[in-house]
Length: 73
Image 1: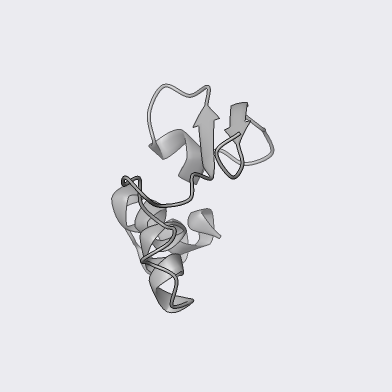
Image 2: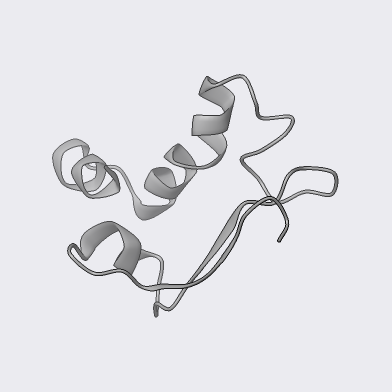
């Protein structure tokens, strides 16, 4: 999805990442609970083994997931 947004709609890497985090939570009406890293929000977090954020957007067919935190665990 991020790759399509960047290639077809010329969104920046920052816009793509916001679209699958903060703005997705906003669209679902859950921004007060999820979507950003803030005290009091549920922690669903992925730690990626990448050199730069653009690797998540432009590289296809690889899974650089290092650690996943789901519901704070």
